[in-house]
Length: 277
Ligand code: NAD
Image (cartoon, rainbow, N blue to C red):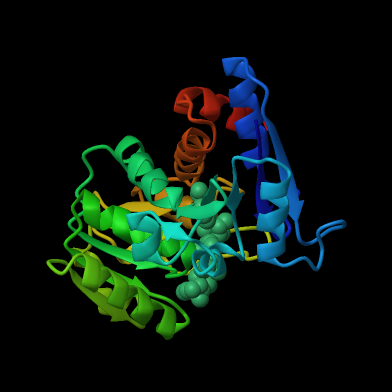
């Protein structure tokens, strides 16, 4: 069985290792390659060419990551409900020559939230970063019980677009775009989810200071490299509950593994391999 990850600058991605380790543990042959458009021989190749290449090589499908998730949605013959709603695809299955797009980031964050912040109140939340992954986080929050959601993005248009999608799909939820943290009335929030790249080595610092949250509040970061971001460190110092990005990374990979191989992955085992790499 063969699959690949398509993305730009993915040499350090843990996804291929997690998939291969899970297949080894289950005792079947699975070759998971990287199609990295930042390096030879894939540099300069278009997403559609790489999708065709993967299919020609007999792959069952591929995972798609930054910066191709949104473009991929327009190249599919069919989309899962979640991928269509979010306008973003991170897993493609080749079904008798057709491309079928899925989005496992959504189920990844939803499962991570249940495990990482059990019983945390999530009725009122703020999402910072309304890009490809932010949409999945927003929808997962809503489907887990958020009914007042604030969206903050330095590119206000992104937040407005996400609000339109969410409001159409889940009309009972009050979604508002804000330009500042203060506008979201932090003292009344249950928690904050960060889906900006802030906190990664290339983007040091944090998108906002969570010090306005009430005691008992939580901060979830989906950045997982490093796991301990400046935002989570600040939240811990404030004695807020925290969740790092590893849970989402593992659960989205487990879900993609299931789609690509037809076999159920063990999230616990994937967590162990994640910790090893
Ligand atoms: P993206 O570029 O599509 O979206 C990021 C958004 O954040 C953009 O809309 C941008 O305008 C906004 N932004 C950036 N800096 C900001 C700031 N200081 N304040 C407010 N808004 C800001 O990227 P993406 O694909 O959505 O990924 C975002 C992050 O999520 C990346 O770091 C990625 O590694 C991480 N991620 C984690 C997982 C996981 O499984 N844990 C999955 C997907 C993505």
